[in-house]
Length: 128
Image (cartoon, rainbow, N blue to C red; front, side, top):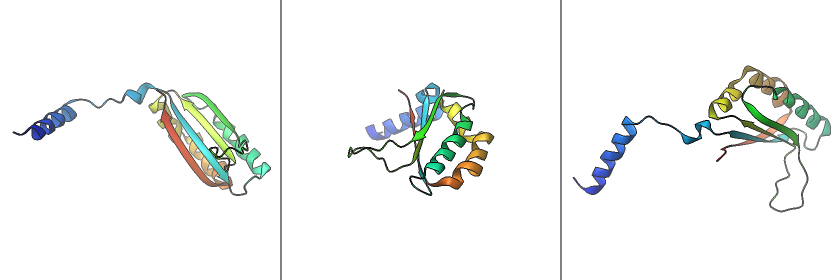
């Protein structure tokens, strides 16, 4: 058996006989959401989005949660084209998944937030 085939066989054995455990499963997860409103720079829509979003602050698994409006910048590396941003840090991957599926979260997005939004970009990362 050639060396490459031997390595492949050993790798397959390890994959199929070892339980898959992600090191990130017990580390905090941060969910970052950038929001562009249907009416850009509209202070009432920003206020309405922020107030509605705060209703999610008490969901289980949250370490901290922040929501606020864009801070204009003249720095070329800063994207200040969005209207509102939200950051949510949760205890771990399981808490993140539960947060995303929580009925209160889903309902608030559909009924209060989505009607205000033109575009959303999300970034998720695991703390190291």
